[in-house]
Image (cartoon, rainbow, N blue to C red):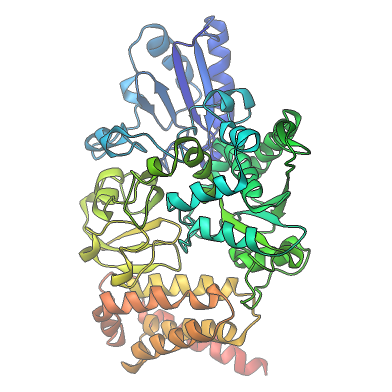
Length: 555
């Protein structure tokens, strides 16, 4: 029987804490009581693209968005909406500012000109724990066609022609990486899915893993087929419990159905996948540190070259791809490279998942073409700045990304667009800041994060981050000198050149862009003025002096 209603319930980490699981139990009990269990289908989704709205639910075909739901609301929705066909308007995910956003939210994740999503097309549309539902939407078709009638060279050629670039941050061409592993000598090769996702403000990979885990496994198997690898690992954050559970379930069911394991679908090709839980170290998002952790060692980066494509896991050729990167592969192989190139730009084809967080009306995530501008993302999908305040700055690309003023609003958000402005797209995270934000204080928080997460393996990063934090503290306390502005850039520049890995190089972009676009604010702090009123100079200075004397007396 075909359900009359399709309910997508947000059970992401945030919604789960708000009581989403309990809400589902109450909703299902009410549906059974009204004999509607077969008419209303409930699908759990990792995230509905919004944040800070408690228990959320999206109802199709009416496209009604409910938010901040309580247990008692389940009865009202069933009685009034599901039975009588009248949506409960007072429970809509709504506010005076969000009413003008609803037109955008109806097309959230839908690409311009009516072309559907690429990466997230299954998220919320299928039960992520049901293999049959994944197969009903062409799941594992690309793998079946590859191993039964295709060739590894054919798979590799399609991925190369598609122009797919790594979605983890660097934007390296995926096909070139696969080709290097295929051509590298070695009797054993590996495929690693980097699902560590330690970048602050980033949760796109978790959405894919929890909403469409079978796709990630299919993509890893295709990568193995194209490169000659027979083993794969998903390195996932230990905090992502739902992701891990759904991955393990998907691996078991895929193995039972013949899509993983020995002689996949009766072909000579074999491929096995295992899950490795990380311990939450930011440094393990760097591919060589991740590999060290997989080998049971301390997660510290390796000096490159050699690169993982020739000497990776246990010294053998290894593909390391991000979750979002891999999620693009099955639809590319099903529809062809030319189809994928219809999205985005010539050098950055396809779509991208962007995360809009900070001082916006509707924080969350959205998948759109890479031609989408920052203005459209913030004021369209994000609904603009909360409280009718002005946009002051936006940090693009996570904690290691550039901090820009509103002059970049009309830039397209793809890998090459921000280079001229001194930034990177990175993970696609966008932290939006209004006029209440102090840029100096913001930079201080970023540098403290890098100091905390540094593995300490090389002294430019170990000493440099400590020196940067101490210097920025001088601006916050009113003890900085004008020359300290240039000193910050000098230290960060030296770290960029001399550090062992990307973490030590990370402070350069946020610092250099913050000074480039907000130098006047640093100069004001030298004179004891914080235009946002965040830095309490006298108090901070007294605390610094107290700490200094504590250290002196302890000696």
